[in-house]
Picture 1: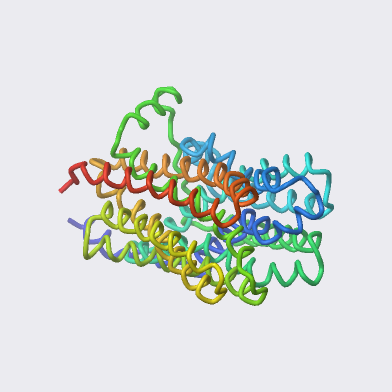
Picture 2: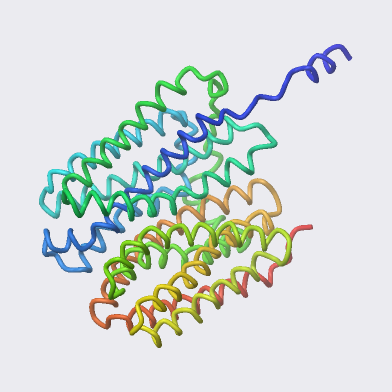
Length: 402
């Protein structure tokens, strides 16, 4: 009795908002590893003369590490400590950006991009875990919602500030600026969090089964697999659309504007999908609606390419629908999962499939657009939407957990 009254008198830890925001900034700096190559794609083409497919492969090479180690990354981070993994990943990313600022040979550049994948994966695994630890229970949904915007915000910032740096000072300064930014946030987080009492206890997970056996079980479970398949075709498309579609706009002013606006529209679509899935319909139906909206928009896009303003409007609608896909896929996992273990499997597989899409998408889109222009883009997105619709319907056939 005395113990229980004593425990009830202990105040719940407050949300450490400054540290949460700093961790969010770390996520932005990691997502800029994709965004900096997206905004500088034309400059890289001109400097290295390697063609759109090879340069597109360099853009997507960041996803290779997550593709291979996505499911097991959380286990690795919990063994070494989330803060150590986060700071190490940020400092690695900073070092690689500084190497890229020297504009080395293309082969060296490609290797640095693959190594950046380990940096990006470390941040994506460790930062949200630390955010959850530093958040009060009544703020966790809010802080994780803030975290979820990091990718779109990174592309918007690179489309604005990064594009200005690129136009005025060139590729070297762009990569140098990113290197200084990601290194600085790594150093700041180290000194801010190294003695934080909330982070003193770091869980250690044990290997309960062989890695390959664990992977086989996850892939055989449709409740974990299908949300990831829905998510796959989104990641395959989004980075490519944000990279290549602005170049199809005939007005240079509108091109710059869309580099900033499109990532924000995508982020808005993700929040919208979450709200619809919460209050109006099952997330599987939201995903189905989103892919149908993307397909309708891209069909309309092929008909109005002569008007830059109307083209931008339809692209905005397409990206809004596209942004709804991750919101619905993330909502599917707790809806379909029967227990916490299954839910964790779903999120791990989502990370792996997301990196698969980000790796395969850019070189595929670059090749299609280089060969067939806008028609290549339209046909490729329509094919992707067909698969997205198929897996959304398949996921809808699974009975949800009451």
